[in-house]
Length: 448
Ligand SMILES: Cc1cc2nc3c(=O)[nH]c(=O)nc-3n(C[C@H](O)[C@H](O)[C@H](O)COP(=O)(O)OP(=O)(O)OC[C@H]3O[C@@H](n4cnc5c(N)ncnc54)[C@H](O)[C@@H]3O)c2cc1C
Image (tube, rainbow, N blue to C red):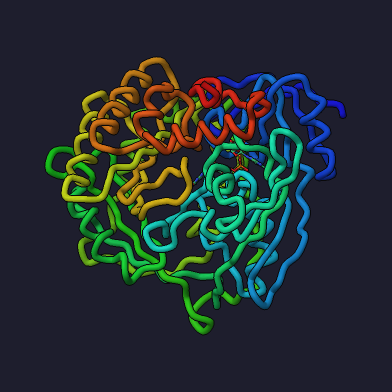
């Protein structure tokens, strides 16, 4: 099978690289490519991981054309599809039948295979856990070309090394997913101002048992005792009589595309401060209620095609870290936010979520709070992120590999500890010849 050399990057557009890309059309072609290609390969879905997880100058198997639905049981809400089917496509056929994805990331343009390989989480992680918990089983093409059915009950070791395993255990050909029932395509939301990180944390804890989803936006410009101030939002699915009828749900294509050569200087400290001021005024201590449809609630960024170009040609880093739940959670986050503020680096967006422990060896969430931040890429920011990594290692926190483009290998071992070592052992067993690898795998020493 032929490949094409393409210049690719992760969503952060940091350090693009030329990669030979195979685009098989049939599942049976995947093992053929694996057997015949001379060097290690990695799968690539929709390229929405921010760093180098789906890049490989040695070779890539794209799931772009392996994107068929196999079966949808609309009575039970069980769907089977190939790894290249997007979450948008699943929502398109499921919502009108009264079913919804149990775990939804901030973009619907992620593939089923990518969602499993990153074991993604949503705004409901504290209650519903991660994506893999709803994968009933999956079919994996192992590095030796053999097909393997696995689930939490069958070949469980490989299943849990694959969910969150960043494509290193093989190619996910198809998966069967349990969906959750819904009555409408809207959510009832309540937003309130949090005066600082301590209040934000308290709001998450207080509302965890009465909310389907919770999220907070931190005003990165609030200082001193107000550090970590922002808006907290909790939301619940609307009932049939309350929300947008399911039949009215249709995936909307993006309405506007950011041009290729967007001037990066427009995103500077001053424009970010203005944006933050506008965003955080207007919501008071009493709070405000509103009804929002799925598009506005789950995927506001998807309305702007190629929004990642706003950071210019050098790209950007998304840095998502998590600190453990406990009495020090707010202090740990305060310390990190302070480190960032002292460094005079600012993030356009700062999103905070609440998590329970995740399943899977390399799954990102532990029980705790995560914050995701976007920084323009460059030499200067690297030192700051290394410093935060050290702080996380000290406090038992970690970073999310699906967002990472720059961490050092020793750091990941410290953060993921014995899970990382166990995972590497499993990879060695199923892939003794290192047939799967990615730019991330090489950078972080997954095969060492
Ligand atoms: C705007 C935005 C918001 C986001 N919000 C969230 C969020 O809320 N929560 C969250 O958890 N993540 C979030 N993400 C990250 C994103 O959801 C995940 O990285 C997602 O899994 C990417 O899917 P993809 O198809 O683009 O995978 P890619 O980026 O192409 O690949 C990601 C990894 O999956 C592997 N992979 C892909 N397909 C396969 C396959 N068929 N078999 C084996 N391995 C495969 C690749 O090798 C790679 O290691 C967000 C990303 C964006 C851009």
